[in-house]
Length: 244
Image 1: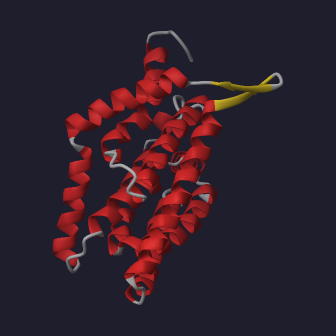
Image 2: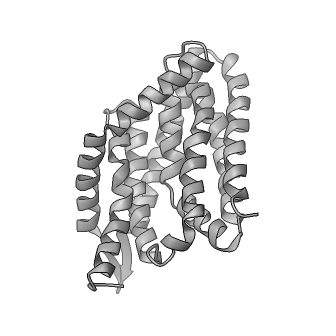
Image 3: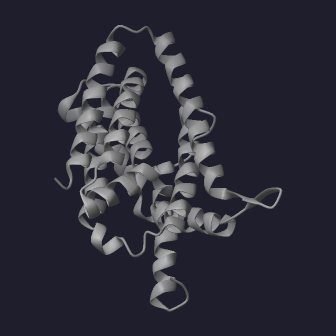
């Protein structure tokens, strides 16, 4: 059934978060703190590896950079767009609204919601898996992502609280939209475009890791539109007969 992959993914996140909340209840603050530090380091290296995989290519006897200017343009244009739309503030308000309605006050509730939502949505598996599900009904990639996200949700929730469970909603909307629009998007989401989007996504995941370690405070939510700039750029080239 088309769409089953996204549904399973959302359920896995909720299940992992519920399990993580049970663990969190019995953990002292110093353990929660070291969990967040470990998660932050892991997220940094996941983002770094994803970014380098898209940025570097083997050429001759060494490595060459690719898509550098497109990556920079994507971050700048996407950042301006996200800042104008105030995406980060919107996500924070959504997390705080859910906290008031469904949970006891918790300082990291909104952080868990925003962080998990971004991590689960910006990776290549979300795009490729949703496309495969929509085009062929093959949800294997999303089933694999569900396992990873479920395990990650346990760890995230142990460190940041039950707000992580609510990230299942944006994941469901995001991946579900790609699945439903797969037929329209297929001609434009080429292997190169997905690689470029993954490169930008890797940079954003790296930034999330920096935030988790409290090294700096980057408005990753406002940079979220940057992921789609390579897609819009390719569509522009195709429409004006400059590529394809």
